[in-house]
Image 1 (cartoon, rainbow, N blue to C red):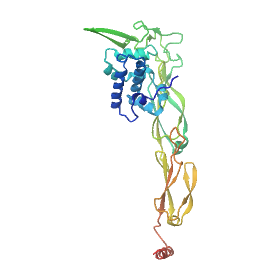
Image 2 (tube, rainbow, N blue to C red):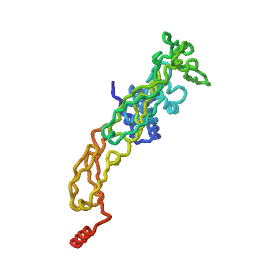
Image 3 (tube, rainbow, N blue to C red):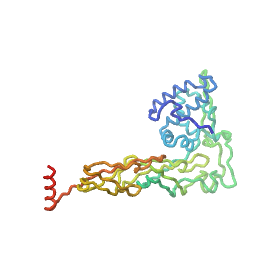
Length: 359
């Protein structure tokens, strides 16, 4: 299978380009490569490529998925109909509403499923969880029992009583849609609408399953395993197609909302962590070697003689990992010098003698 070019490269924009500028750039390219304007052999493929790129990058949700997971995330979550459906208004505005884009869409991308333009998709499920900073370092394998809509095990998702089957809709001949033509003066307009008899399914259930009442799905639960990757931060992460199931369509996604718990010792800033180390003014003055905690265990560091309050010592590579990378952030140790609030008589005499000797 040929590898698709990066959508941003296809449109000649960057990841920071705002949506309105992406739309402007697409219009320029679409008019240049539209098959009705450009008769070159490559125009059709160019038009298909830029239209697909625009359909994804113009939709905030699809763009977020693409930025996070790349082409694999889009292919694993959306069908061709899903990709183009929400952008049809923009395409129609550009090419006219007299069937221009519909005919181009059909000739380039076809119709999958044969019953409707848009394949049905199950709804997403939100699952919230918290992880520790140690989980951020190592990643975590999650196993949960998720209550959701699942395919009916009695009819295997068909919606029909076992031993029976669906009948093709006689109104639309199993297509799930009907074409209506109307003339307006010199022009003829064709519209495509979901079949009202079968509700766009292309078939009718004569004897529904008694367990799911013909829906092909029912309330249930499923054990799901997924990995929380190392380097994760607060936010939403997608487990594709583990949401509510929909027979004959595309399952929804499981949206995992992660909150990283506050740590007793460390503070996190992106991939770096920070730690305050208390030392006495004697240690700050004379210097010494001390042992400090890290996410990996402990580490020895040297306090240089004459270290001042708020001195920062960096331990390279002792922070948390970057997602999808072997590199790690750093750990920064801030030296906090403790000044005694009370001194006994002997201590005061020693400090006064030290002060006189330093003058």
